[in-house]
Length: 288
Image (tube, rainbow, N blue to C red; front, top):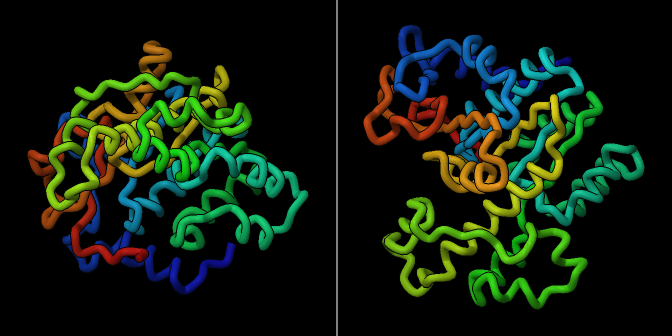
C-alpha cells in the first residue's frame, strides 16, 4: 500500500524517537517493567476482550492501535471483532450499511457524526475492518442521552421510547458512585456548576453502554478489541467494571496511554493503571 507523506513522516518520528538514543515511546507491564511489543501480543492474543485506552489526539497511540489490530488479525484472522467509543450506538446501522457496500464512503462519512480527527486517527481502523470483513461495533451512548442523564439523572432514560432504549444498556443502569473514576469527578477543579450528582452519572452511562454493546457483540472464540479514551478503562474501572459485573470470568486485558517528559521509566502516578502502558514522550506532536 502506498504511504502518504504524512504517514511516512509519522513513522519516521515513531521509529527514530526524534533522535538516536531518545525513544519516542516505551511499553511497560502492569509491574512497571519494560516489555517488548511482541511479547505483549503473544500474551493478549487469547484474551476475550482488549480495552485499548488512548489519548485521543496522540499519533503514536493511533499508530499502535492500527499495528496491534493488524498483528492480532494475522493471528486471529476473522476471529477478531473491532469496536470503538468514537461511534455512537445509533450509528450501527449506517456503519453496517457502509461495510456491506450499500452506501458510499462519502455518504457514510457525511452522516455518521464522526469525530473531527476521524480521517487521520480512526478511518484507518474502519477501512482495515471493512477490507477484511471484520465486524466493527458502534458502542458509545448517543450523546443526547448522556446529556439527558446529566440534566435529569438515570431516571430521565425511563421516559424514552422503546426504540430509543434499544441504543442503551438495560434499565435501570448499574452504578457505583464510590468507584474512583466517578467519585473523583465530583472534585474536579474549574467545573463550577457543571459538577452535580448527575455529572459522573453521565460518564457512567457511556461506560455502561460501551460495556453492553461489547458484550452483545462478543462471540465465544473471538477476540474483541475496543478503542476508547484511557479514562474509560484506566485502573480497571469504568468499562472494565461494567464488563466484570456482567461476567466476572471474562479474560479482559487493558492497555493505557500516558505521556511523560522521560519515557525511560514509568512515573509513579502512571504505574498500575493497566495491564500494559504505552508511555509516550510529552513533546510528541498531536493530531489536533
